[in-house]
Length: 155
Image (cartoon, rainbow, N blue to C red):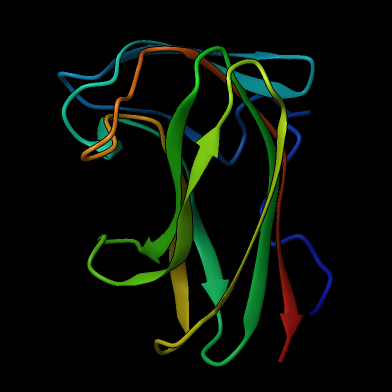
């Protein structure tokens, strides 16, 4: 239904319920904690790939031909880029997302729209990749994320 948040616990009021916060793959190194209805990643090593440090939520239904909007707030202690993505659960099909440039210590309100071009997927996932972005300077930093929503905006 349009306007309903498809993400569960988007403000982290139930701590880490419904989120996989431990998407940290060597050589990436990070710790995550919840503070003031936000998740904070303390990244000490961004690794060698964007997915070396990731926040994920799975089990989402995305319907073919529908338009969606993802919104959230993010702040980084260093200027850098992170990646928002929506894919199938096996990471084979890309549905939508974008690279997000962050200024140093500036809160950014992200809003990204996409149309689901693939067949309806009842087990897709949304992720935020905070590891090394290919071809970019990606410093280690603390990244704070909150107020997540994923809404269907048209049929």
